[in-house]
Image (cartoon, rainbow over all chains, first blue to last red; front, side):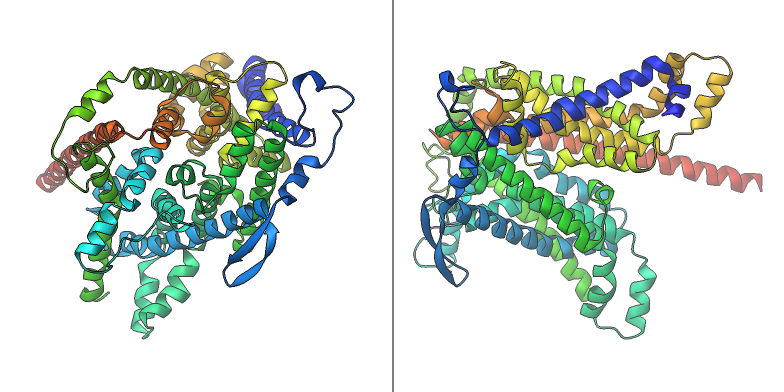
Length: 307
Length: 277
């Protein structure tokens, strides 16, 4: 602090502090506190806001427990509140998305880091970047077109004789997962590539000379070395997927609701902002816990993820 | 690495690029199909009417205008705010630094839905209604984090001795800032501005909850896709893909030209060295 004053003088230092305070307090911290505070307030007509009925309660949070439905997937069968089911399934399928993106990205990253020639790398990366620059809403729309019942995917599969009748793709969670994987796979590729690239080729060659099979080289050398990259890619993809509203809303699979869609429904169709706040806060809380746990498991710091 | 596996690698790379590009081609192809639904199958003949429809769509021009305005406002706020944050974090140490750093990075990981709703509720209590101004504030809250990270990385390579020297030689604080620190940061500021601009254009979640009645391009395309789908969106998609490709090709050609100049210069230097010997 003292150092700041000496180098930039009072005026500039206070400007820096002021701008940072505006960002962190006014744009981040205070709105989140307001979110928490609102989440305990009941939904009242405008006239009664601030009146005797406007007392704090857990009513909004209790809403998640209403409306029981059957939970019937992953070989399990029991009764569960509808919104909890959506919440749980959102988390599970975000995990699926994360895993699939990793499975797709890993061989690609290995190719980019260890096989591809240095000369072709910039061109390859440019090609990889192109879809990333086309906006997310359009990329989701592309999959909406591909997956429709009379769409190109079914037509292609029928033409090569793989299926006899059109498959209804837009059902359940699979279309959402397919589209999320496509939308976010590059967020896995870049950090994993960065981590893998720093691996010394000699280590792989030494293992080969000593007779290690290829899978063991990956399991014992490449994979452990890429761990920080995998962790940050996984956290990024998981957060983006769980928080995505655009993709599930465009795909619009009625039997594959995402938790963000539940929140949107409460906010916009229900116009119940306080209940919306409660649900948004639950999502925020879950994300915070998930990131913390992931950092513990992979033993990485926030600064590693931020790269 | 045996050659079989090398070929397998090339194949995988090609397949992956195919997987990334194919949906874009399908979407672009549908722009020319004379069918009321956006699809490539069945092919009902070639048409350019979706482009004409797009051109005559007044709402979309309004939405594009709004999007650019919001993006410029986000750049104008996020760049100074993120830079100030980075300078602050860079010049302190210990526990306070790690807390501050954590607070500055966290917004990247907060779901957009949460940012949107919290911004809406926070400003609503001061009777500031929803609208694009709130979208700007909501977007800045996490986009400033990207700027902060870029500037902070650039600050690592900054020699603070330069500032000391300037101060010793009698420069004022603002002169040090203007003539020494900022010029060093220019590349990071430029990159930060570009990222802020594109992040803002892309943003959906925050904007959806804070926009009030106003359209941005993303929200408009979304509502168009959700309700009465017409292939004019495909026409728009094709134009955007072409713009992206043009930018990519321009960038690639530029890079290759630079590389050639560079290697020519190196060869020249080698020749000169050889001649001297």
